[in-house]
Image (tube, rainbow, N blue to C red):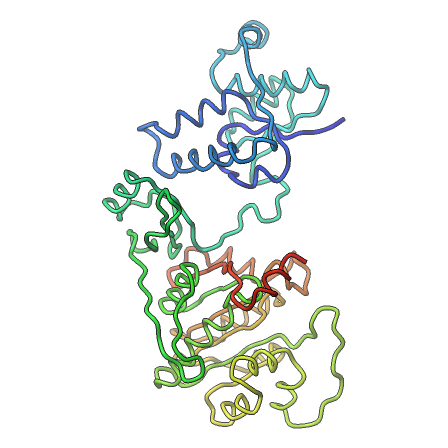
Length: 413
């Protein structure tokens, strides 16, 4: 028997765009409730925002769902056969049951309301599930920021209530504000009981010249690197997840704000690539010529000779994860953990525990596209879960590819 998901009002508000990954069913009553929520004075701004967003998504994806209507026969059935009042919740559940019986399919009733799930399961015999238990790989993916469109009234309310967490954001989460025309107006960050404006100016580096964020998301990333002890950056190739922290660290190094910059990497061959085998030379030469970190640094500094000079001058150091136990990172140093998507929980935990108070750390990688380890053991995801909301932690998902037009197209392969 076919099975289809039937979303109640709270579940579709919770899921937002994820609900449209496959066809689904909703009740006519849910559409009415969504409209009521958008203007209800008793609802908080976060809930009203969700209602506006889901209304837009429903309008843009009409082919992805079916609305189950209700009539007087259904209302009579609820009252006389099930001995329930025909209120909104009971109408929604009964609509799911009627559709199941009419079309002889199996309905999976999705709700986060415990009482509603009980009615659906015990009285109507429907299979039920909560949104947290749905099989969506990235349903709770945390990006570190939200892009929120506001009309004039909502914008005025936001600016007048910067001490109210109306969007239920976690500490150090960013909010990028857009007006109704889709224009970006401002960027703020939630922390210490208020929203604060994010302002990040350009800086100079001998190796990278004048560096400034290329978009608001990069601005959030730079603010996190500057303000937090630990920053997790993830995104596709060309998004700046290596260049941004490296240029910042080198600027600090050149101004003697720090003593050394460390590069930690996993000494593993690229997925599907062959190893180079035996290499002549000392330890540093082997690291630079036998691992991906050599290519990464050469591309940033111009060539490997310059990288070797910086190492010899004691400005930078390269440490494979195999040697991490014997290392301690000083308070006046900075650490970049490159291609961190390939590191397990234990390795990342060990690196963090080797850093003294005040040591700046950036963990960068591509969680989705470039993972060479079992996704179930991915350390970056676990790190995100554990540190999210910590006062000295920031996380940003970088989106835009600035490397080249060809690399942008290659993302579709």
